Length: 353
Image (cartoon, rainbow, N blue to C red; front, side, top):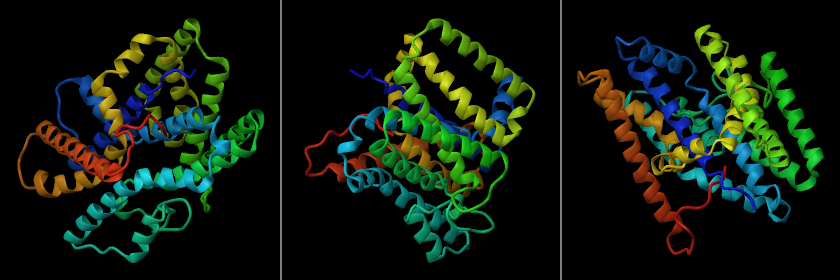
C-alpha cells in the first residue's frame, strides 16, 4: 500500500509563494530593513526566486511516476492528455485575458499569433518569439506549460511501453542530455533553455521517485548525512553568491537539493506533520492558481495601487498577497463549481502532478 505523500503538494504551494514574492519584488522593489538577515533573504529571493519552478517540474515528475506508473498501461493517451490540459486550461485563459487587458490598457498590442501559441501550449521551446523561444503574453509566467505538456507526453510513452529498467535508463538519458545542453547553451527548437529546464527537472523527479520506491530511503543516518550536505551546500552557495550562476544552480537544485529534501521528509515524521497542517495543505491546493495569477495580479497591483498610493513597501506586500490569495480562492471555487456541476465527483481530487 502506498504511503500518503500529499505533503509534497505543500512544498509546491510554498514554491508558488516564493515565485509570487520574486515577481512582486521585481515589480515594486525590495523593502528596506535594518536587519541584515531580512535584507539577505530579499536579496537572495530577488536573484533566485525563479527556482521554485524547478520544484514544480521535479515534484510533478515525482508525483506522476508515483501515481501513474502502475496503471498507465490501461489508460488511453487522449483521455490522459485531456485530463492534464483540462486542469490548467481555465487558469491559462484567465492569465491570458488579464495580461492582454493590461497590455491594451497600457497602450500595447496583442497579436492573434501570441494568443494562438499561448492557447496551444506552445508558449516556449518550439518556435522563435522575439529573439528567443518564448512567446507567452507579457511574460505572463505560463512558459512552463510547453515543457510540462511535452514531459507528460514523453512520460506516457515511456511508462506505457517500457519496463522499469528501460524507463529508468531513459529518464537518466533525458536528464543527462538536458544537463549537457544547458551547460553548452543549446538554443534550438525543443533543445533550448526553456524546454530543457522543464524536461531535466521533470525526469529528475521521475528518476528519483523510482529510486525512492525501490529502495525506500528510510534511514535516519542517510537523512542526517543528506541534511548536513544540504546545509553545507546552502551556506556555501548563498554566502559565496554562487547562486548567480543560474544554470549551475538549476542543475544542483534538480540533482541534489530536491532529492535531499525528499530523503529528509521520508525520515522525519515531524517535518511531514508540519507540512500536513491545514494552512500548508490549503496553500498547496492553491499552488496552480498562485502560479497562474501571481504575475497578472502583480501587473494590475502595480498599475492601480503601487503607482498611485504611497504605502510602505511591507504594506504593499501584504495587500498584494491578500488580493492574490483572495482571487485564487475565488477562481478555485468558481472553476470547481463549473467543473463538477452535475457530476458526482469529489470536490477535492487526490494529489497528482
